[in-house]
Length: 233
Image (cartoon, rainbow, N blue to C red; front, top):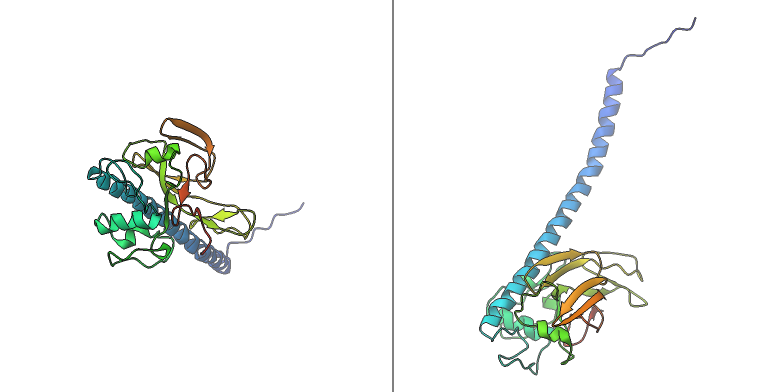
């Protein structure tokens, strides 16, 4: 008859287990820390976009409901660039220069006015106003429309074939991977997994599978009056 032989759990065995556990913890803690920091940056980023929209609404109260880039009679101004629109909000002290820079990147805050800011001083994209008869232009005022995107994280060029990324993604070159925050015209902000496939409404026009980084329907621009994609980063 065979006999089972049981070996006691020794002190050496316990040390081995402890070493393994300590190693696993050492690996896991930085990963958890990075995840928390990433989540914290995304939350702060969304808060800033909401705050920028609040600045637009406050500005509109003294401009017959229109946001910067339009006059109080509803006419598009000669300068309606993204830089000018941000500058108007900075000049009126709705927020500081740091507030228009994403927590996920390093840029130089503009602390001097009235010198005009550049893309070196801000991170975000605004509604494209370049086509006068586009229905989206109806939303560059305080309409409280929960289906119109008017602010967002920008699109950053990521190689060939129109591939883009955002400050929140780091795909391999030529891979299209954008995730980011969108500010809607009722002052709510969402963090979206894609820049297209959106359901939106601008004025009386509704859109499905909307892509905010093309020139149709909803469209965001980052630089000047019609530059959609950041090719400088």
